[in-house]
Image (cartoon, rainbow, N blue to C red; front, top):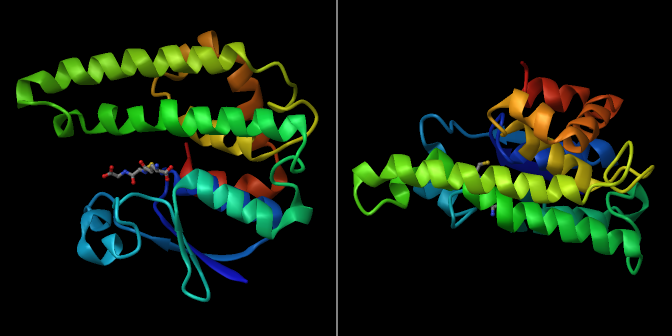
Length: 209
Ligand SMILES: N[C@@H](CCC(=O)N[C@@H](CS)C(=O)NCC(=O)O)C(=O)O
């Protein structure tokens, strides 16, 4: 089974690329010109109706969107790779709990922070909307921080997709010194994930600095 990951460096497609690298999947990359808004065009909308990245395309033409759905499908289809703890386990329940927290409580705020004009009734409201979304973003990171007891990974010894999701979203915390001070557990997990050999090329591509 071969996959094509549609995305762009620095975007959420890094989560899926990292997952595929970790499980040893056969994949290729299709980078969109995100700065040129290629992902907003009709061609990409045929793959992802929300015009967002990532999209996973399977070699038989199957299309999967939504980062969490993609991770769950990869886990089901590559069960031996252990992308998530085993079905039915308490560890899986907690891993899913916090992945979904990030996907539903944190990730959507990125759109509001990056494109506040989409949510503003008129342009002058955009800065206040961005400011409010940034405050919510920081508060919700602190909620996550308060529930991460594991070391070196979020679930303890066992690395899983939760660590990948956290590491990519963690890079979007713009103020790195705030992150280091306020989110020491997040920071420690990000360091452990970045040290994983299979992921070195993925981080180099997505977060070169
Ligand atoms: N719910 C989606 C969110 C994906 C998303 O927001 N992706 C961002 C990149 S990190 C995007 O494509 N943004 C482009 C835009 O909003 O124009 C998922 O989890 O896959």
